[in-house]
Image (cartoon, rainbow, N blue to C red):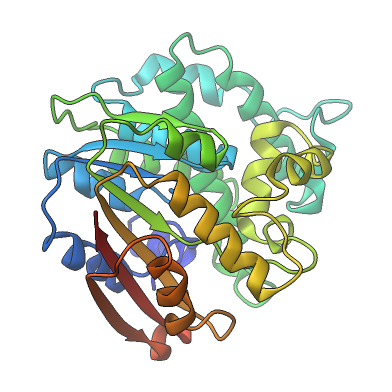
Amino acid sequence: MITAATSFAQGGISSPVTFSNGWLAFELGVLRRLKFLSVGLPFTGEPDLCVQLKRWKVRVAANDPMLWSYTKATALVENCEEALDEDDLAKILDDAYVPRDDLENAALLNWFNEADACWFDNIRNNVERLHSSYKRALALTAGMIAGDYALAFNEDTRGLREPFSLARVFQLAVAEMLSCPYDNSLRNQSSNLDVRLFVAERHHTDLLFLRLPTAVIQSDPVRTTVVGWREEWLRGGNTFWRDLDGQRAGRLGSRIQSKQQYLDFVEDLLRTASHIPLWAIAHTENGFISRDELVDTVSRVRKVDAIYSKDFTDLLGVRGSILTALN
């Protein structure tokens, strides 16, 4: 998988926190076998799949409890026509490296050096000067790409990074990824709802695409990964995590005590989704929940029609499975 660091060196931009192209191709390969005109995703994560489905003329409803994913989906899925222009870029990048007496978001220093933390702090404030919510989402998406790029370097590779390159990465992201929003003439949506509420509201959706979240038993690893910085940058600090844990408690996506509790959460969400005619459930077989255990859980709610599997052991150390079920 290409990281932001290597991609930038080759003249392009990509995120280091995405599934590989092979994984995306696996998901799309399964979905090509199904008949649907609309889809709902309770856990969108990176919106690459949604962007492809838009091009298939599918009406997409992208949801995620995490603000970073919702922001990206707003920019790339819900947005169908707006793009950032030169005036917008000038506003966003204005005095971006001018230091302040104090950072508004001091949590950035946990991720970046002082100069970069100042840049992201200023960019976050400048984005609020944009009048369009879609343009703000586009700018924040470009900012996340720039941050992922900076964090892709370690002690051994930091010398490859160009000084003061964040603005260049930001501009490249806008030019290469965000300059041509695609309009499929349908009302695509992005939301930041509780997953059960989102699923319950999908009354006119053909397909539920449920990408199962990784089971978390103790501390939430999101806080210490590159995804964690995105959330802290967008929310303006790191004091929100306890409240977010409380909001997610007792449902799929929250911390769990056991394997059975995780499977119970899966079953609960699927029962909430019983009104959606077609399901596709994507599962990463990482040794915690087996495919057979998942099949047993899904079968308590609806008969499993087909199981598709692909081995990603060499690339990601896991196997991928997608279960389909038709009402």
